[in-house]
Image 1: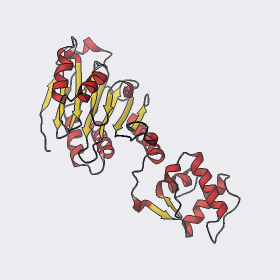
Image 2: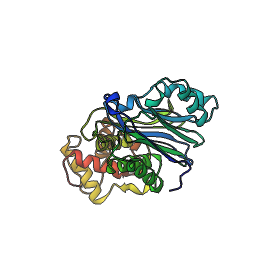
Image 3: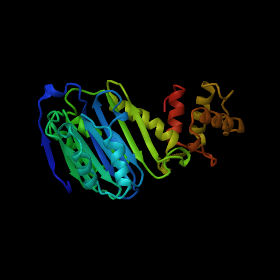
Image 4: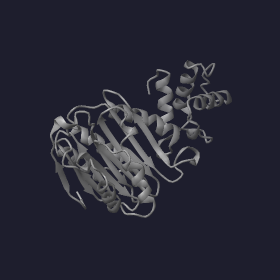
Length: 309
């Protein structure tokens, strides 16, 4: 790993903080796209409402352990005024009486990463700072959780979203938080990256309470990805002809959008039925006018109709 920082560990008396969420997260900046993001899992409900904070072209912050939630908005405000991540961290912890119970990771828009783990955070607790990212966690199975996250993040190909998911799953595979799982969230910001360009929330998906929150987060994200994002590779476009045309029509007939299958062509009525199906399922951004269909939509349609792919 190409690490620009170090690994830090803190121990504590567990009885002091019985209600503290056991949490592990990674905060990162993509140097190519400029995207900033956080992904997190915790044995605590609705972790996405507390831990991740980010603003496009400014920075990203994860505040956890006995979380001081004000670190999020206050930290982003200071970053937006030009303060570096290290200076923001120092400012936040210097004015906090409960600092030894806090854990925080910060990455600014230039990719400068810093983290802090208070000495009273519940063991295993610590962080690892890398090039453009920081991994941190508390009440973990071992130090290997953050090590595995960092290693996986660095070796994973793809965009920031792919890398964050891979890192989170690696952390869980390494033992995750030792009290179990309950909630997970991913937040990625990009300038005008939100719906219709109206905000910077490129990705904002949360699982507030679930026995397998990481798997559930992935499942929901796949729907979010199909609905709101345009990440699918152009090689996944399928020509609507031959057997693909037949299967689409069979699915539309079974779902009640079409009266019959036209074996010879994808008729005007079939095109209208497909458009209606796409609109009802909120996949408008994936509808094509070139007689091709995204593989993700094709597979979703067939699954919805109970047909084999």
